Image (cartoon, rainbow, N blue to C red; front, side):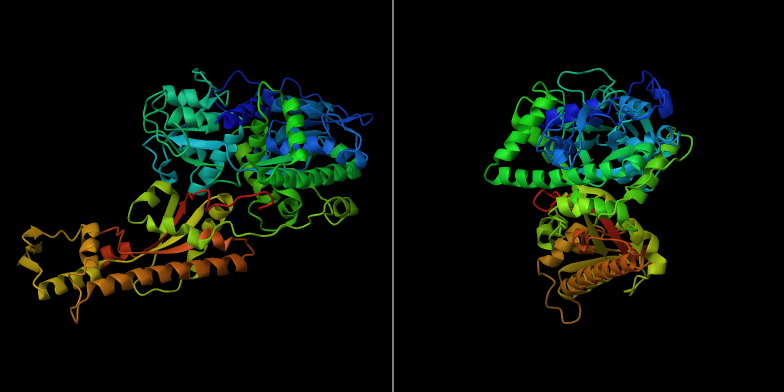
Length: 618
């Protein structure tokens, strides 16, 4: 856990905002000590900010250090760069406006929060030119027992750092659940990672621990251990943990929420377009080589990678990174998008994780949360990705597409139906109803639900969507009773008006006890009746429910194609639940029976061996 501790403490430096009042959201401009606008000096080395994040290690490699080293990637491209610390984001924006640096380094949501300030002057309006990485771990939502899954967050109270990465993460969760910020209560705090022994309530973890009315906290990885006892654990109340606290979800599942970017000023972009293109191409080349070094290092060792780890350790400081493995952990916490990811991000139409979509969400959040009064957007990179700067410097032009999920690897999730484990792994669920004997799911009727599934699987790219068909148990119950009476196993008492009661070996058989009913049918005691065979009927219901689930998936794929939307079909799997989870266990009429006729979309966590998020996996 030391590796995660070091990584996460760095993030708290990155996201700190210089504001003494954290009772609520304030305009981003009020956080700045100066909004003076100056011109960028282009003589000598160009100052470019970096932050404490794994994606920036590629920048160190491209530059050969903080100052451009002879023979480095940037040097060969004719660039002269001085990398400067940028963990103080408000200071970054001030330097950007003043012309001390032509660039801002931050997440898209952070840029969105500063968008009105950035776009207030023609010379400083921003061009987002490079996506470095996605966050694929380290950011977590820890909750108390009151929150079973994301369907339960309405009306709940959450604590998170003001202006930090989790603002966007929470916004994505609200959008995914169809809620707004008005549907929850937020406690804003100043800091992010509490670190060992920190107890004051300006940190999410401490506030969650000390204030029992807070239902959930957005925290970084070391605070997960302090609150819950570790990933996959539930807090016992001992050793400082919070009783019942657990990780509901993280960026492991919501792997397309936090995107790291570089933004350049308009005046510098227009007069130094070639310079910026070389900077981006050089970074992408460095990123490509770093990924290969890292893979080699993890297999058998790599001198190049060790050298880079030492360089990064020196830059970040041994106080924060006492071991090289800590730096390796920092790099491992990200997914590099590389050349193919940038092409897709900036140029692919209808990309739900692309520039237009993420910008729309970032600006909407900035205005709705009061960081800005009006939406002021950014320019996309505008690069010709087939230009010589890219074709000459990047060898791996394309990425090999791999299925992130394999159907056979989901067997344990499907098998968990009877154990209830699937409920524990559920992040979010919703259902659609169908009519008796319905086998078609029209795009006109179910289009909104299909769109939601595509959006969810796109944002939660580290999770699996199970499409779960359910059947009504009425016919199975009827066949069970008929076969049982015919075989003399079941005794019936009572009357139609007063209601019937059924007994097996002197004990009353409750037809509402679905688990018991299924167990009886599976025992084989009721097999052999030539007219009534409940086992066959129950299996038929299971088969039919799976076929309906597959029909929904087929319609979903058709919807995505007709609307030019991308969907990873390997991330979606059909499950035939059959009669195992009825809404009404013993329906009294057709209206009640129809409530059982449903298809459920369930977003679930998967184990590490099932999920396969990797570099250049976009």
